[in-house]
Length: 226
Length: 115
Ligand SMILES: Nc1nc2c(ncn2[C@@H]2O[C@H](COP(=O)(O)OP(=O)(O)OP(=O)(O)O)[C@@H](O)[C@H]2O)c(=O)[nH]1
Ligand SMILES: [Mg+2]
Ligand SMILES: [Zn+2]
Image (cartoon, rainbow over all chains, first blue to last red; front, side, top):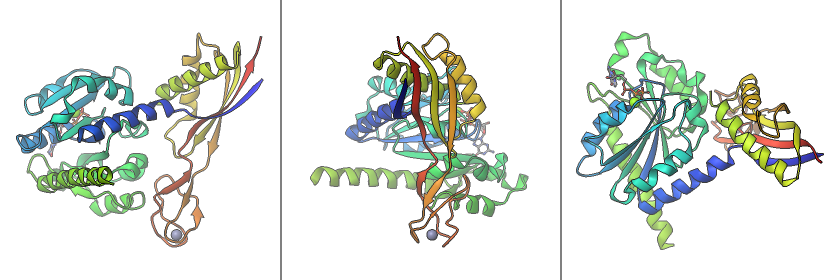
């Protein structure tokens, strides 16, 4: 017997992701999925960002790693709340893991939810977590050819942070190539040079976060009043 | 690497659909895999074999049909075949953000044995 179906294999994950998104909307929090290769500077970015936001914008962090709670420990004293998810063998987070973390978190009291995905430029791009925005970090030492080599995450990006820009002179690096490769995939995502060491790009990054928050809350207010 | 997660999700669907049809065994499975999906067919096949063990789909033949990418240009309205790293329209040069097909992963049919 042949049974014909049309079944999206990722439907189960996508449904949970949609529920997460709804929870974020109801709580008025902006959820950001941070994606990069291992070691591109996700946790360092969070350390600096949480320090800059502290007081004004309490922020929650969910960190995914194969093993250890080191990254959670690094941000613990600056975050409003932190959850570490150990994914074991899995090279990416699932919507379900985020959903299971939410009951313990006080979303309504925070402005931003940063989800640090497992270090990997391929697999996290395939799994919607329910985030509002995807931020991709690409560090200078990785080389200037990575946008074209890992196109899927860059096509889906809302912002690309070119991290460790302080190391630019130490590498043979063609910034124009990164820009032109990105513009073959993504018309809108800004490409923002950033350094946690020198502070370059920090102001623009914080400005972008505030703009995104205002845009989201504005859109929500319009939606409610309509 | 995420082929294992995909195979696990796939087998869940297969087992459920087979049960709904009172099938005792799944003999063949057909999957449509978009060319833009970051799936390595050989790895997915191995992962499928592994997660199927102990389920009604153990030993089932998995056929993967590749779906070529297609994009629609908002600039000039033409359809074209993008490359995974280049979505510039070959007719007018504008960047297309609309993917019509090629990023899907769809279970399209099961062949089952019934009692
Ligand atoms: N020179 C320089 N080094 C940096 C910068 N940002 C981070 N690093 C260093 O890069 C290394 C990795 O940074 P992490 O923040 O741990 O990277 P990550 O992306 O969180 O790594 P995983 O979670 O393991 O994927 C650390 O030794 C940081 O000190 C930067 O702007 N400039
Ligand atoms: Mg980290
Ligand atoms: Zn065109």
